[in-house]
Length: 371
Image (cartoon, rainbow, N blue to C red; front, side, top):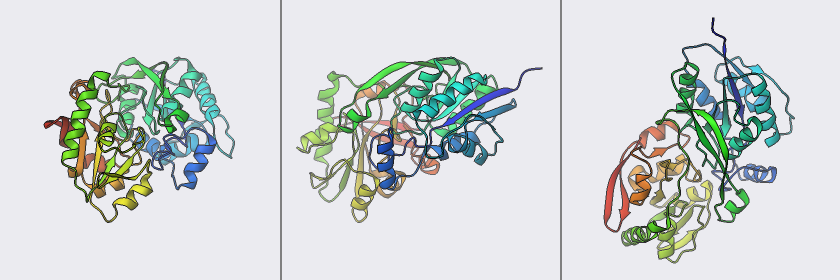
């Protein structure tokens, strides 16, 4: 008789809190308090529930988790009767709670540790367990550069079920994180912390982020010129973050935030480093277009580092008004995989599927799909 499988669960209740309000992360009590003041709402609990509801396993398993909003509430909301271990303080959780939970779940001999969070949470789990057991991340943070996450909550839950049923293998995946303080100062400093074992399916695991090389700079300048020639003075252009979009702002002589979302109207800066509320206000009575690039190696257009461009904004703008920018090299980094979206709205993610024109040079377009 085979032993009952055990699934460990950790939810970082504040992961993703700073995304829509433009804080570029959620690490630290001060940032979390500021996010709440700006009207932010927790993202990770509902994403954890969505993942848990998607688990379908051919074998029975026990769900073991931490108290209240670190997993207990989410497990019960998804229809489970979890075994609850450990203790947390009612006034709020910290990274130490995540690390303690991970250590205790290792002692419980769980077959897989499932966690909801971002790169900071992945790093805390890594620091705690030292690759002793397989893990899998539900993408719920602002920063998700690591390769230990599923592409969205639903597919992550499906992969959990496959793994517990014994129908998928494991592989080593990177744990990466960035310096949030530098990030808010418009500097991207990423560091590889190590590797963890994950269940693997090439169509479900997002992979780690890949950067573009300097040789692509001239291509991005050509794309920028192409975009500028078609700009309408009456339209609000929502410029997403990243090195692929910055050359467009440079050609306009607009000082863009490299890692923020900026608004341009009439070829001039209208609003800098905006949050969801500011963008909604700006486009309420104006037509808009979203200028965005995909993440190299991952393929994400929405849901990774640009949560300010929320489902409400995407719906208001319309999928026909997406201007997608990518060099041929960046598209090649996807190795044939499609572009992805993880907006947090399943219906919108479904609506956004299809084929899009991608600007790849001056006067050059290619057709690529979102799946």
